[in-house]
Image (cartoon, rainbow, N blue to C red; front, top):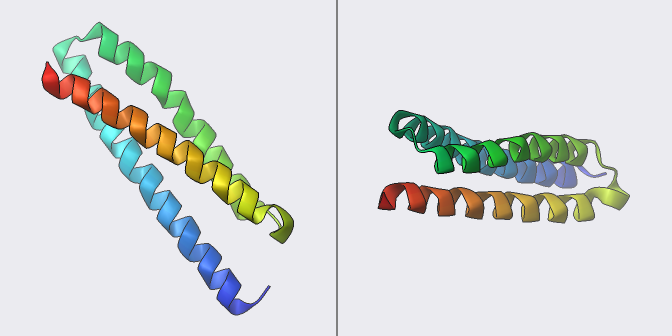
Length: 99
């Protein structure tokens, strides 16, 4: 693995970690709002999303450990999961803002 490849992989990992952190922060903010408003449906939706953060973090760890042969597939899978998670958080955010 060349130095350029290593640097590129670290940049990708940093970017993905930032996306995860941003989505998690939004989710935690939404959770606080839902709890304050006693919005049971939103709390349930948040409770269903929270375990996904653990799965995504595990997948990120797997990506960090992935060899060259599995890197691209693991990266693509993680990016897909992050995109789905971000979409679910945005949908929930829209629901909470419309109440």
